Image 1 (cartoon, one colour):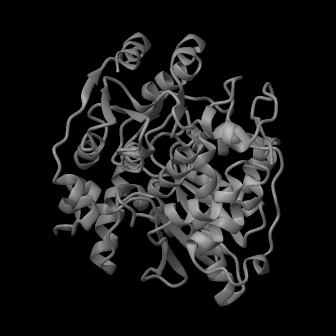
Image 2 (image 1 turned 60 degrees about the horizontal axis):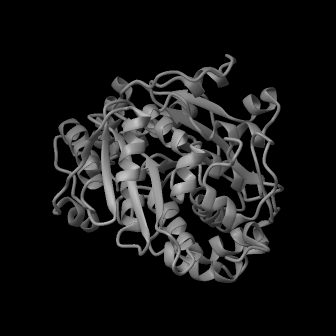
Length: 431
């Protein structure tokens, strides 16, 4: 399969080249030239997440040098579960995606990408710099996935003071080939700096650069697998489609769900939950798309005012009228996030992170409007990552998963960086 740019100004290229480049030369995002189509019976005999991922992704890897290693890549990346569990309310489920090493859904894509890129790196090649902007969870997942990888270094840019304390600790705890840069600005500033670096032809001629953000196909494609796994589980038990509420900021996880449905997986409605950053909400309510400055909220990983993957969304649904008909977006403010965390724990003993709480609140509204069928809230992070928010609301400590406890026990350090491209360029060249 070949890959093209969302902006149409780049020749079709293979998967490895697209993963290595991160961003297309014309500034767009790589997308598949076409989509394969599956039926549920195509996955007969495949039950594990790794098995389903390998079969789902095989067409996307066709004719690429990585195709022969796809089974091994999936086995290496998907070593922890994506659990679909029942909630207390009837026909409501939660898809727990936080059982990986950094307790966030981004572990799936980051580990898959690292497995690909380590196989792509030629022996004796110049060191590769992985440049990543994070609003909270991406950076830690990438740091964990690439820590100690030979001939690779990782620079993580995050907005200083706009991530949870435990998130910040994770970002700076890896050391070695992984450096954390706390930027005096917003996530959008961090993302803009990364994009400037990828658009700097002179810099890229001097040093190989690649991305580990959700702009990377190596992050996006594997995220389809846990939606396929959950939807197939529902189909095999009940022969019905599974609907999803996806909390989203930069739209990568949501686009992965949309791609899985477009490939024929038994997925029903997809509703997006956002916070007080209203770029997506206002567009789906009928306004013209307009990126804006992000605002800080309790659900900080979703504090995105200019979601990069909106380009992929428009590629998938080029007619805006159809796009607006296919999906709905709900915006949840901080007061509602607090109320949801507090009330669900009090009523049912359920504990959610602020991001997952936006999806829970949205599902409650959907049920009040009469939505039927089985729905899964996508739980993107373990609530223990947000102890300073969650514990005062529920009046109890949140147990820390062992993998997260291990990271929090390490020393942590982050370098200060101005929200200025000249400063980033100097840091990149100074190593």
